[in-house]
Length: 75
Image (spheres, rainbow, N blue to C red):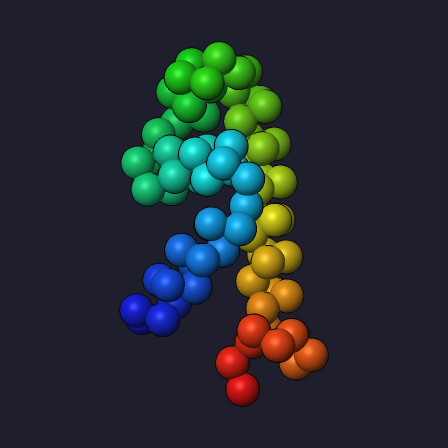
């Protein structure tokens, strides 16, 4: 469990700041698209698409960590 949390923390550090902020607001703070959009002065639909793109970046990072030829992946 702790290892998973550290992995997610590392992955979040690897994505751009705007991704960290949007993902934190949506998942950790449980804010709605509208609340996030109001805070960032963006339409709610833009928030939805950014969450999707940012999650894809996280997934790509995490999948890259688990590749056998990746020197930073655990053996």
